[in-house]
Amino acid sequence: MKKRIPLGPDYHAEPGETKGHQHDVYTTKGELHGYTRIHVGTLMKSAVEDLAKALAQGDEADSRLADAMDGAMADALTIDEARWRIADLEHALTEIRGLPGEMKCDKYKIDRAQLVASNALRGITRAPRPPR
Image 1 (cartoon, rainbow, N blue to C red):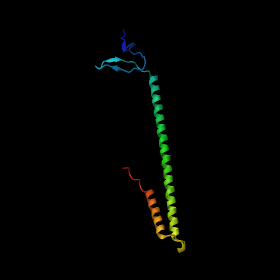
Image 2: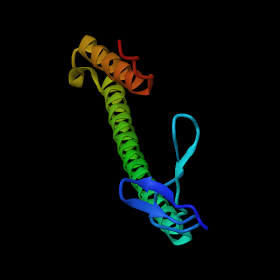
Image 3: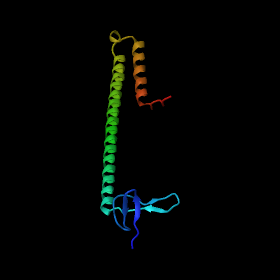
Image 4: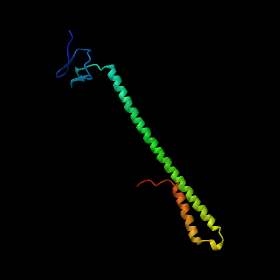
């Protein structure tokens, strides 16, 4: 004669009988209180759901990475454009120095503008300061 195994207030299963998703349950003394076997189909469904969830999280992470890389590329293009503009400014100031005397601006202003352009170019190429 088979012994009935208690699973809860109004729920019993014959040994080896499947009645749902309940796992092995042990008392505080380590005695088996109740159990059922889980269908293989249920395990497969759970595994497929977990896999789909992991793939969705992976796709989300990939899209965030792609967005970050696009932003970094845009920043790099902006920095390159700023470098070219400053280099053009330095070239123009150097050209002004070569003009005839009556066409020259104040030499001090030209030197000062060229120094500012050089410092700006160095500031772009220099690593940013760490936050304090």
